[in-house]
Length: 487
Image (tube, rainbow, N blue to C red):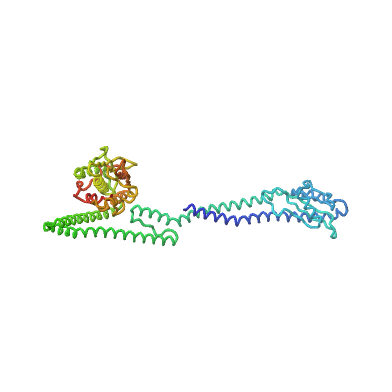
């Protein structure tokens, strides 16, 4: 943008210079030509006064000497002709040319002639001046001079080169000033663009310095900062509300479940017992939703905090934690890794919670006799973790919607889950500057791949969690996993 702004300034400056210097250059050429023409007209008029008696008496008299001395002194050819165009006297450099005939025609008609109007650097013809010789109103002849235009061309060229130099200096000054002015004008815009990208990447505390650039852009920077503050405050309030509401609803929900559970022994009707069981399942489902909302609120509040972890070790611990549930559902759960550490830089517990959600989904939808494979490998300068299952998979349109909050596939509406598991995975991966990609497996199933960047400096020991990794049902990791039923 700065380049385009400088080019616009430069174009305007060039147009102004052309508008000013073109008439000035033409004026200088005309002025220099007029000065020479005026001198030659004066000289020719003096020769005409001397040539009158010579033409009347038929003898040149001192005219030959005057013309010769004039030619030697100024290098200008001159001649005196009678009314029949016969040369009466001429200097050594005099010769007839294409420009002398119209000059003689004008002079013999009783008028002075001088041409051309202006000498241009690319014109080679001489400056021709002709003056009639009068005697009592009768034209006896004419005096003609031809002045070489080389000196005039050199003078005009020198003036034009001076103008071009001045114009070039003005253009250079304009470019220098334009770059400074464009930088001053665009500095707030550049900083606004950088801060916008920082905010989009999750650095919500980034702000624009409001004292840069012209007043209009300063007001824009101030308004942007106010808007960013307002949006950040709204997001904080929203997340706080979700966290507080989810937390505050847990106690009455727990009390409600206990009361519903206490009603069980008093129910003797089979239909009543069935409804009682469904009521308990719904309270468990609501508790799961509240736990997932709390986890999502915590994940979205993570800002700029990164830890280095061994993704291979975490994957091994999560596979071991989910093996009992996989066996219970007759699903084969395996881990494919080289055994070497695979370090990654993520927000805390990102890999743990993401794997819990993906493995829970894979085990849940693979069905009896299915297989789930967790693979850890280096890829693209980081670490990739892949969870592959043999379930029904998703269609292309379902894959596009899979990370939307509370979205669930139409054919699994009755399967346990709240539709927040993959949303939490996407939030954690994005906060870690990683990638989440999902595709259909071959010949069936779903492949979900996580990619996390490698640490800048590989540590000797990765950051370890505060305690042992919880098994399903023992902590918040399991709560995230249990909410991953989205298909």
